[in-house]
Each structure stands twice: as C-alpha cells, then as structure tokens.
Amino acid sequence: MSDKQLFTTDYELHASVKMLYPYIQTASGLAEWFADDVRISPEKVFTFVWDNESHKAKLTSQRANHYVHFEYLPESEEDKGDPSYFELTLEVNELTQMTFLRVADYSDFTDQEELQDLWDGLVEKLKLVVGG
Image (tube, rainbow, N blue to C red; front, side, top):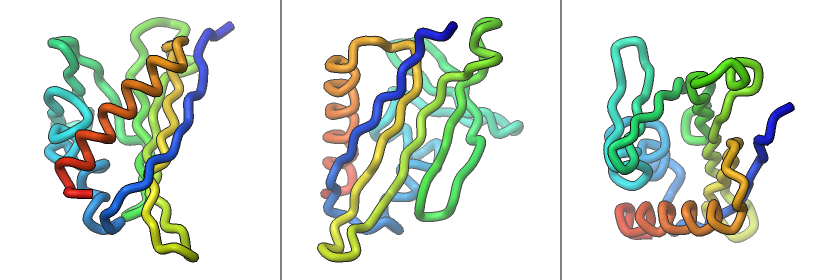
C-alpha cells in the first residue's frame, strides 16, 4: 500500500502560455526556477538536482504549450508499481485571458503545508524569471 498523496494547486501568472512553456518543458528552462540544476541525458532522462541530491525523471507525456508530465524513475520496488510524478499544466481562462499554472505533485511527501510552501517558493522564482 502506497503512502503517496496527490497535491494540486494553481498559480496565476502574468505571462503568455507560449512564453511559459519552455520554462516547464526544457532542462535549461526548468533549471532557472525548478531545481538547482537540471540536466538531460541522450536517452531523454532529466536529472533534477536539489541540495546536491539527484533525482531522475522521464518526460512521459506532453502537449506543446499546454502540459508536461514527468515520472520519476523508481528508487524502490514499491515505486515501480506506483511511481511518483509531477505534472505542470498551463491554462488560459477564456473570460479573463489570465494564464494559470496548475501543479500536480504525486509523491510520498506527506506534509501538505510544507509542499504548498515549497511550490509557492518555486513559482515565485518562476514569476521573477519571466517577469510575471
């Protein structure tokens, strides 16, 4: 039985989807706000580095200017059947034309408040990078 939980939250961003998409889909874009460093191997495996700890993930699905879905490579037997992932989705409210970033983070991180603070900080960094 997995102790993993799905955390979701939305952020309003003052930037266009076309401008934001490279920041959620490319190693160089993600390195500017999401992790201390992001590298991509020839096999298209992303290595995210936080506090000198590496975590490998594959970009398992994406739709241009809409969303990306990264699945972490299993670190244990349990992970194989129930892998952790995160998904970043860009949405535009048709009425207000505001752009939103929806975060879905499925992991064994159980402190929802701490996770909210973590994502708040990451997205604040993204807003500084894109000027939004």
